[in-house]
Length: 63
Image 1 (tube, rainbow, N blue to C red):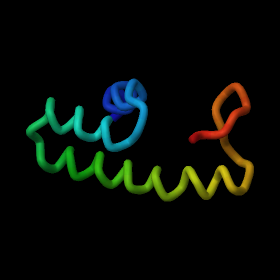
Image 2 (cartoon, rainbow, N blue to C red):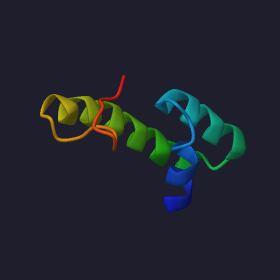
Image 3 (cartoon, rainbow, N blue to C red):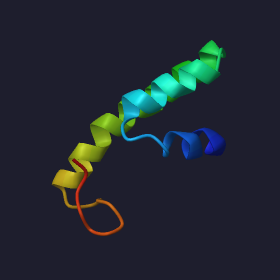
């Protein structure tokens, strides 16, 4: 899973990362797992930002 996450970090948003991953992978179970992770991230990240728990390393917030 670590390699997948490194690949995903190269893309500006979750959807383009997921689309790129699907393009390279035909493993339906793995795609399902990545989709679950992205859905979870899209829910958790904004909430954690509201709580002031996370942001970019330079201290700015995500867009």
